[in-house]
Length: 436
Ligand code: SAH
Ligand code: SF4
Ligand code: F3S
Image (cartoon, rainbow, N blue to C red):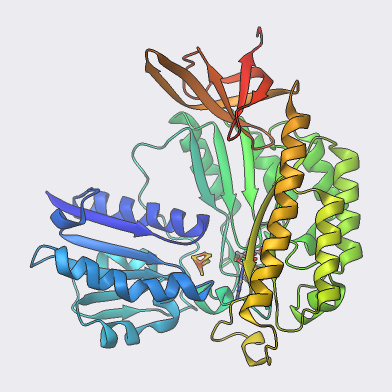
């Protein structure tokens, strides 16, 4: 039995790509997964290049794997850093056997048999490729609905690493979702860099459609109880979508709405396509339709043209929206992006100060929100349990995406149960079962 070790960095899309790589290698090449790189015959590093730090880590990781691997074992570098560094990776690290870009992962079963293959063509189209299926899906499954990204956000390397946007045909998605439901999957997480741009371009002629229509079609599948998606773009959040989000009981009431900046001036320089007012208008409409909605966001601080006043506008939006989850980053200049050419007058100290200010205010918001959770009733999808006395509990997520622990109950995985939040133990919410 050949063994595969895989390390995945980056976003949910990279996790999905890793699942595809694993399924292809298991089904077509007879690999089994191992958690121990020392015993692997093939080591894959699925990389991210969205910020400089994870990219820098790559070469030290290759060195570490090379030092411990079996003599004949191969190392392959896949993903976004593979896409934009290509051949350079093999030049710098000759222990690497092949480089497979994020847009080329369907070629995995070819490149493992070639010496020093570099497959990084970002115009390659595998949007209709029938990837091998994951034999044992969990209660929750990831489903790519599009590849690539058509936007040109000036700070972002992703369009360069993943190419132009192509949607996956609706029939393929419905077919896969049906099969997943038959295997016991209850929750789908739809993935794309820009999910609500779905239907903008297909490889082959396709009926006109859009994301709202896709949500309606997927939610009609029996057995699929919950649908989540990431990331929608604020620009494409039309009323029809927000109304479907509110009305459709299978769509979880939590949503990621990446803000990036609260300043219209900075948003323009980032080429995000919306204003602060538009963003707040969409939030207001959403909250009026779904008052209990959970909202998460991404914010970049210290974009080169961000002044203190611009940053204060971001703080203002944070205070108005009161996000449930915040992913925040210091701007990191990336190759192949427009913003890289900008003069950056913001010192590292100032950037760190802004990040700390943002995060500490968000902590306060979270503390207040957690207090407000006490007494609320949620339906929780059970994803995990521990049945080892004296430790007996189940845990899962509310449809607003809060992790809730239910002590003294061992509930079947995949069941959806009503729970009242009793208290907050500092980390997670503790709930008590309600009669069903
Ligand atoms: N398509 C998604 C995001 C993909 S990248 C969207 O539009 O929201 C994930 C997040 O990384 C982005 O939302 C952004 O906040 C952050 N990011 C991207 N490029 C960055 C850069 N150069 N520096 C810092 N953060 C960045
Ligand atoms: Fe990057 Fe913008 Fe595309 Fe998101 S929408 S992946 S931030 S270019
Ligand atoms: Fe994802 Fe990182 Fe690529 S965030 S799209 S793996 S650059």
